[in-house]
Image (tube, rainbow, N blue to C red; front, side, top):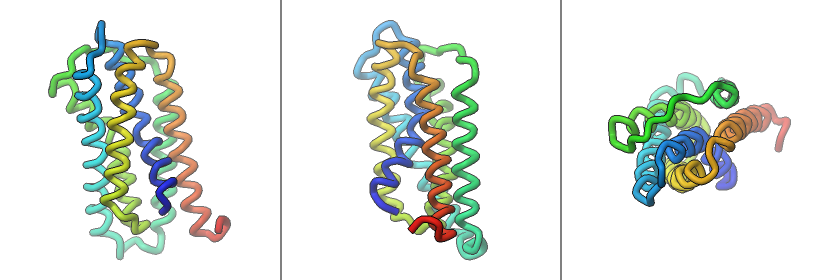
Length: 186
């Protein structure tokens, strides 16, 4: 997998965290650098950790499902992407202005579950995991910091668009993996 493909996946995965960071920015009267760093560290850290865990899980089962791994990658990325698109159309949730562990930990886990599934697909695709999870973590960190600031300044205008974009990107990457394996794309 090329670096640009990993970056596109990192962007897609980070859109959930970005959308939640926008909401966290909305929830505070004045977003401080500490708010942005807290969101970035929680979301970026979990977005890096979860694909690593998924990768190790995937390598345990690689030999059993190697003949259908491209279909699994396609299905997982497609389902995650479709869910993100569905969530982009849902009603907004009540905002919580806390940036403490009780508020941030569940959000970080919830926004990174899809990254766990992507990590499983990385195992099947023989992706170099260290650069991949680093790129995902750094991208999510940066976009989460930006999301807190944008949410504080502009409001919820971009939340649903970010989730929709992330979902489309993941579906397209899943389709690309399948089409490459089937020989349709060179």
